[in-house]
Amino acid sequence: MHFADAPASLSRYCSAMSTQLTAVDTFAAQFLAGARACIPVVLSVAAYGMVWGVLARGAGLSLLEVVLMSGLVFAGSAQFVALDLWTATPATLPIGALIMAALIINLRYLLLTATLRPLFRPDQTSSGALMMGIVSDETWAVTMLEMQKGRGTIAFLLGGGVLAYACWMLTTVTGHLLGSAIDDPATYGLDFAFTATFLALLLGMWKGRGDLLPWAVAALVAIVSSHLVAGSWYILIGGIAGSLAGAMADRVRHVD
Amino acid sequence: MWTSPEALAAILGMAAVSFMVKAGGLLLSNRLPRHGFAAAWLKHVPGAVLASLVAPALVTGSAAEIIAALATGLVFWRTRSLLPAMAIGVLTVYLARLVLAA
Image 1 (tube, rainbow over the protein chains, first blue to last red):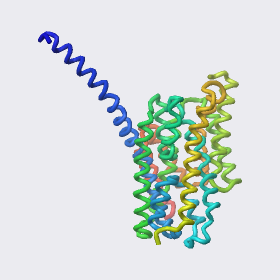
Image 2: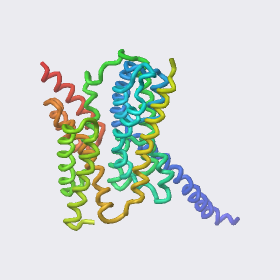
Image 3: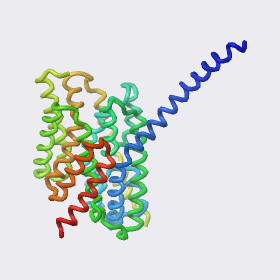
Image 4: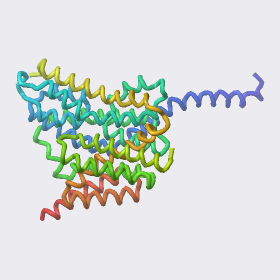
């Protein structure tokens, strides 16, 4: 190699290196960015996790059952409802009702994970489906906000998901171990953390007047159905009504 | 006692249906058209779901929750940042409950 060529080949070598590094770097950076962006919502997950752990102990779940349910089911609202149905004696455990309740309460995830489609290429969706287990309301919403800013990646979703999962496991187990030694989060206003973060996330999604109609329809339908139908059906009903209203309004105005 | 076959069956069943709906949403959306009405509908789902999550909680809340919601909204509008918005919301609801209960 001529001495004069050295800088050129060196820079070629460096740029090849950096392309390779960028791929790794982007995944790691996006993963960390997702985890960092989810810190506020994970605080709300932690508050609920503690409460669930305490209540689970009261409902008669063993520590192993807490670990299994938090680790395998990983769905806060479904786990709360399960505690109402749980019995300390195995013989009277309503297995069918527990499974049915989990299915009904989690039906809203059909809507949530459907909106994650833009993160995946069409040929990636089967492997992507396997990642959906780690999605929760909180990390979904943060990723959605990121996607609306024209960013958002699979790594970002996973970073938030892994953080929320670790936090849910840690706090539900802690709640079970410490039991009633833990104060009710409502004492410190922490019960409001969920409403506050989701309100802020909603405001962050505002794009313009086109959002007014779907949001108003969703809010009204959700309020009415929360009074008429027991459980969390109102999220699904309001979400479907509002989004259909938005799509119909777009059609009338010939947007899209 | 560690666990029972009944409890294990219930937990595994709950896990299976939870995973099925979570994975099912993405798999079903992959079959939806990427243009036209279905795409427009999917675009409006996130906002509509979030509005449905938040609205009933705000309507059934007490004065303390309404004040805290306004504070949360104001801070988020000024900072565009989740953490301060949530922190102010929690602090406001804590203080408002103290004041309103007194």
